[in-house]
Amino acid sequence: LWSAWGEPIQSLLRYWSQLESRTKQTFDLIRLAAEGRCGLADANSSDKNLPSRAERKIREKRKKAAATLEDVLSRSGEGSSSAHDNSALDLIYEPLALLFEERATMRELWEKREE
Image (cartoon, rainbow, N blue to C red; front, side):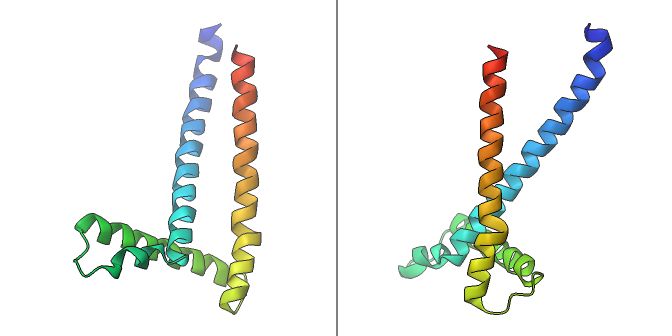
């Protein structure tokens, strides 16, 4: 049985691993952009001490993610910042939340099937 299905199953697992990796990258980008847009990047810098290298690095990641999200939103033709907030919710956050919920449901069902 494995000789017949071994290669297709291994191929499926490779594709699934790539999908999981890309999903994590997308989720991290969305999270960092949201943190950057909410001002979390500047909230920690209010003290007079210089930020550590790790703090500076995460701040730059947040800025870059927010800029990427702004670029994606500008492609939709929205002009103002409040319009970007609404379009970000409608075009990015809500659809991805639905997809993550759907994937979680699928994982639960697969786990039940394996038992």
